[in-house]
Image 1: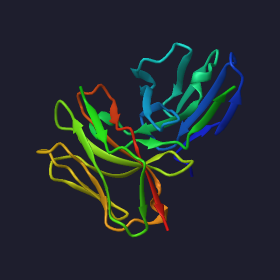
Image 2: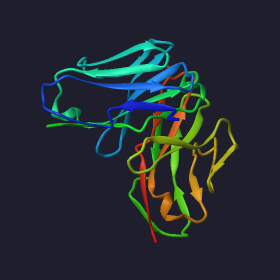
Image 3: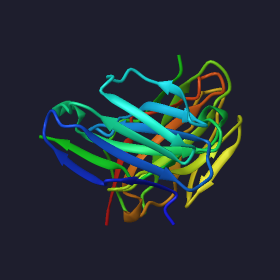
Length: 115
Length: 113
């Protein structure tokens, strides 16, 4: 059973399109995250939700909009895709906030390529 | 602010060589410290962690000791294998950090047979 699963794994799309990445965790965690990893492997947090409430919203263009319908799901919608959005997007979760020393569990990543 | 600085890569070693990946941190308080590993094509997974000074985290032959006096959490393994080839991330988390963990830039390790 995959603990944190995200779909699609690969996505190739044209500039200007709108796309969504879905994420689900079956660990019973109350905190979920979206991270972006660029081509140099640098990892940056984008958003964090705790019990469906947004608690971290880093400096991310407002073309990116997370949605958490329940504690087990955190989807990422991206409008008007740009070339610079090409990256690997990781969904993750933790029991309680990571700031309290809790382990973060990552999904396998969604490879987004904008052409 | 809080930050993590880890040894720049890439690091290339022969099988059975000794590995050290340096990690130092800056934090306004007493953080928990982590090493995460990312194998090719996969997400990050926890390798080991330590939550207080002088604690040693260990897993799969890897070890790291939380050194408060030098603000370090260096990763070591006595004898690496080809299967250890991956990207290694040092990270810290702090109660006062508004829910965020801080990750280092990652160190790519390649082990050659």
